[in-house]
Image 1 (cartoon, rainbow, N blue to C red):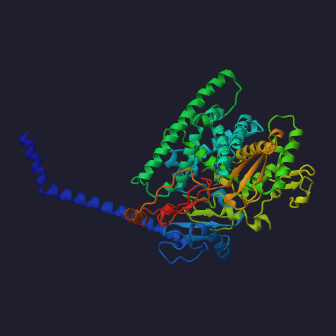
Image 2 (cartoon, helix red, strand yellow; image 1 turned 60 degrees about the horizontal axis):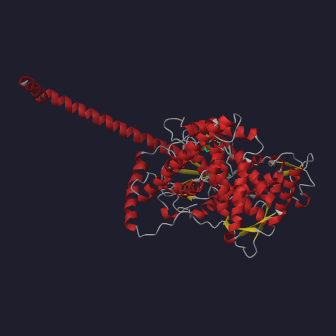
Image 3 (cartoon, rainbow, N blue to C red; image 1 turned 180 degrees about the horizontal axis):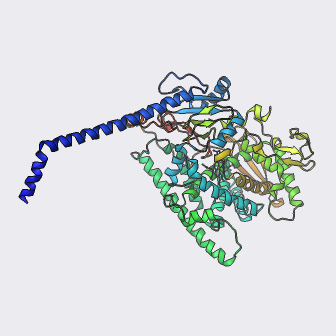
Length: 607
Ligand code: HEM
């Protein structure tokens, strides 16, 4: 044993071994140095390539290395984009930072082209969903990863649309109408809450079937989902998940509660489905017999995905966006009694001529046109965003957009732009989506000849106008568009059949708008429901404001260091840097826009 140890000792202390170790160490250092240098050179090369490709896109000159710092406040950022288009043309660029290029587009045909070619979303959008609901395939930033989930959901929804005229069952309509009646007995209800409740019931029954209507925890689920929705983008706006923040862990515990509740309703849904299969082999009440939903609810999904992650994501996006749409329709109808009357006549006419018990919404063209028009004027998602993470994009006009650039479309302004919608672009006119049924006639704009009882119309496809983008377009277009239009139409057909909506006297300001629903049932004439229009009140408690300047400074310095690290070491030409990342939240269905680091986090607009 001693002799072995001596041999080893001699070997280590020998000159040649030390020389060998030194050379090995030097070699390792050289390899590390060459690797780091080549990585850095690659980054620098990509940076120059990005700068040189972007130089061909028109835009304001950028004197600062950190991009256009003075972009104005959040509120007028969209106006700033719009005005810059007048100066620089239909496509222009802005540098948000040395590695972050924003390209804004205004020309509808170029936009359609871009939306067809750019299939990816900013990683931030996927992150908001992942933080709240865990890994899921829908709403993923890269198109390749989202494609499978999108296709299977689209197939399920198409099946539902083909199967029945009414995508939401009579039970759902009855349940919502009961809710409206109950509110009438109390006397007053918030417009936002009633729209939210309607949207929630439609989405809940789409995903969980009629079991959802009898679920005792539905109200709590609704509140929890809205609380999570309110802060989702805020937490996702951190480049590095803020594990050090107590608020983040509170948010995570809410998300955990939501997951437990989702699993609870999913289990009940599964049990009821088995029961209904025993009782009625042909039953098609909802979800669990559909492949997409059964995979989700039954846990038969990719092991890396969160059980029910897609379901929660759909509830989240679908509820918020549908709430906005319903609220927008309510507001338009209240403001335009004439259209409301005409829709009522149309509903009654269709009802009289039909033998069916449910609403034949396909025949209610003015109602459908009203929904399209309300969606056009919907103040949701001011920016539609896309990017192409891997490949450069070449637009129809030959312009090259480098990979990783953040592509934005100021959709809200485009949808009210006179050059695409005519001189009455900012007015509510559902007839722009209708044409007279006579061959060769133009779209109808003269409301004197627009009585649906007297004239016959055809409904134009809203997507024929390239500037119609409330549901997006192209590769990542909204999968639920047709479903939501039909579902909301069914709901409004029943609502308008039974109630008239009026603006209550002395409530002129938008924030104080009161709406009366006057029951058309003879026994209850004179009863009305007050609806407080969009009060904007949050369901969440407001956090007390404390003086946290010291802590914020430390956090700021920490993030600044990470940012420098990010810019100089991890630059890869993708729109993932975080000097200033403006992200539209069309998927969250609300008009908020957030940026990280450069604006105070307290300024993030909430739902
Ligand atoms: C009024 C209601 C809704 C509005 C305004 C709306 C709007 C949108 C918009 C603007 C997008 C992004 C499109 C793009 O980038 O081109 C989107 C995506 C999507 N929407 Fe909706 N949506 C609504 C309801 C729904 C519903 C009810 C569902 C499902 C049942 C749904 C499922 C989806 C899905 C799966 C995506 C694609 C996400 C992705 O590929 O990343 N939406 N929606």
